Length: 466
Image (cartoon, rainbow, N blue to C red):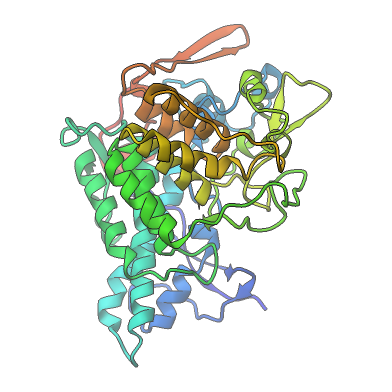
């Protein structure tokens, strides 16, 4: 049976808003719902609940992917670069001054998160009129909490893509993104400051925590551990390590499952043939060719060589095509449908905990958190716990394992942004494309992608410099 639900696509400021009806399912359970084309038709908690149960909006290709293409997570051979079908893929890879051309009228990295924001705002605007009827306080709370979580996650991904890295001393003066806080399509907010953006993101999440269930019905739905894990990720990006540790611990207090790679049944294109046990909240990135097609991109052979032969990630994350070991290809996604996972999982939270503990000077417990993860990644009986003689060595070990564990998860772009703001890192990325060299220097203005041209033209937004 095919059912219908509101579909809002695409969202661009000042442009015509289109409402479509599409099929929707949640974890293979089809939803029975009526078509909704306006806010006033949402008259029950059941209506708004079904509106949130659209994986095509909230989970599938929901997160920006151009930061992953621009990072040092992947490299592209000249032959593959020339065959990329989208100019945005080529331009993101070489950090071009002009990111979009006449064919880039639909920029998924912008549109998809703002589509989530629209859905979330539609629900949040409808709830007061619906109220709590029939003793449905728990359902009301979960719906509100989910909408706040989704909006927060979308705003965070947009800030990581279209605004410069967070700087506490200057966040009030740096432009962030437009904060759309209403479903009114006539509202056209200008760019808020980064400070205002992060305050809204954090506020939404903190409010959502106690409204959400500890255990969601499906991994594609938010939960208390997911909200805490996302807060830990956000505070890490902000360089607020005590708060990142606080929320990492809060997540792990309720969910600390790690998958043993010795027991996983992998597929040719994914780490598992189902949702992995340590997955807390499941979503994927925009499906660009360099991310989605393993022949399009490879990883640095030196990084590949840093994995021990007894480290199961070396065989579960990578494949060697055409007998070319200098071009290892990534196949280790946590998405069993062969999209690239960008969700929240326990391994990331353990790594956040380890890093924050080490930064606080608690080297022993920091290394313990790291080793708790790594023992699940090595062949049974072969792992020797890592030790460090001092804070610098411990931090290097943690960051290296973070690099190796979270490859192609949409996280590296933010890590480059935050680490380059600290003394001692200064990570430059270099490309050689058809004999021409390109360099992305630390703290370059190109760490904020241009806002799509149509948004500048129709919404009157201030453009990022290049």
